[in-house]
Image (cartoon, rainbow, N blue to C red; front, side, top):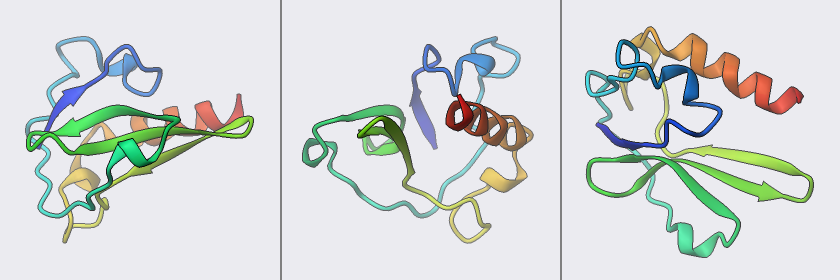
Length: 98
């Protein structure tokens, strides 16, 4: 489950309102372990309840790479069933385009 979310980050700012900020109903069964210490330009945007990063933002040259450590397919998580998914990907697209 996501337990550490940076609602000041542009991807999650639209969810900062308490009506939309509950991500505890989205279960994650599998995720990849990434040590952010190995990525000096990484910022943890969201984390799992076990303390490992769920979403990292890594500056690469003039751009930004977002690393989601879990999949959105049903075998990995319930992220695809979340009403927040379409808004999340819209915000990612907005970040990429601008």
